[in-house]
Image 1 (cartoon, rainbow over the protein chains, first blue to last red):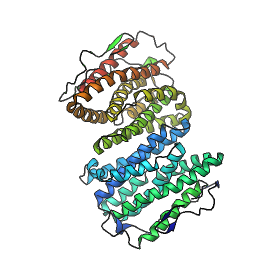
Image 2 (image 1 turned 60 degrees about the horizontal axis):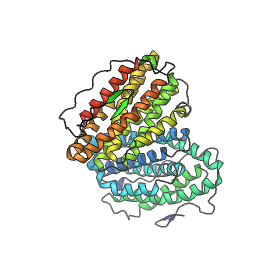
Image 3 (image 1 turned 180 degrees about the vertical axis):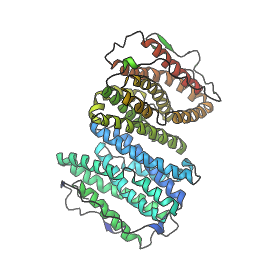
Image 4 (image 1 turned 90 degrees about the horizontal axis):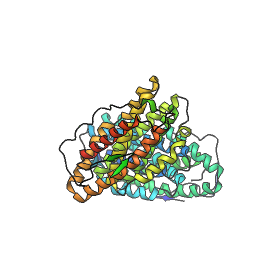
Length: 241
Length: 241
């Protein structure tokens, strides 16, 4: 069980598997983060570099897939990840920035995140992608509310590229494997709890990169919602968060 | 020095560095391979799986980059690689195939190729991408001549996605590094000779997958041209092939 500033993540009674037929849809975001949006170049550099890190993890996952079917899915998810990256690079270019210069300041944070969440096998890697891409996409889409109007829509569209389809396919593939193997189910439930802590650290860093004090009590409902969404994501796999 | 059915690859006198200001443009293909085109599903499965393997190597290269600038370039090249993969998957779908089923028969050949050509560091990985993507793209574009008219153009367009720009950027980045470090230059010259042998094996397998006998003497001028194009590619880096 992971706690974040007093918010308990998940229910933690059993680390078992509860397969579902159809995952419940995630509710629409309610709490905005527009007051905590960092400067445009910080925002774009961080989220563009994050996509590169996810791509690297997916490349590694692809080389240790259990089957060609799993490898094909990994390629599909990696493709959307790099499409998002490319669309974000276009925004960096639009504002006159250099991709490497704008991404560089975030390498230590994200490289560390990537090392901690790479996973020991294909299933762990894909759960990490599902959890991290899901949670951090949520955060960056909320933070986009504070971007200037001429960037906001395009950035949100970039972040949404392939996200819904990929999430659906990842859930289908992981659920199948989890349903067939109770040992994998409990291992992934544990792994999911570790992942959410590391992922929330990145979320926290993104929010703290603004000029606002990140200890603001307005953040509490945001983290409550992020954790609730994470619990629903794990639930969709039949895993206790 | 690598030989291929009697064709000596490169000049092999010196393994040194000869930086150039502007690489000569590669000449337009002359010898067609349309008589050796395998069945559509074999062709598409092989080339789609190859792009996945290149993506995996790039993911690994990205995680060992010497700089954020190198990582950004790796991401750009990986993006085009997966854009090609995606466009090829669309063709597999168009002909009613399942991506995993169509790619599966080629996994042993390509996984082995990838293991042998992964490279020990970022520069070796990127040289491998440059050499393999360059040479095999050449081969598959020539083989596309034998595809049915309603597939040919789209497949060639898929293979050309980003290829020219990426090649230019790879040459610029590798040339800089080679010009600054004579030891790297001679190491990469050796590595390039090993790569061309492994890459020609995949080219050979692609051509042999047709129903034609691949020992046909018509293949000799093709291999001569492929090797000449490889030599020009190494030359563009200031390396002796």
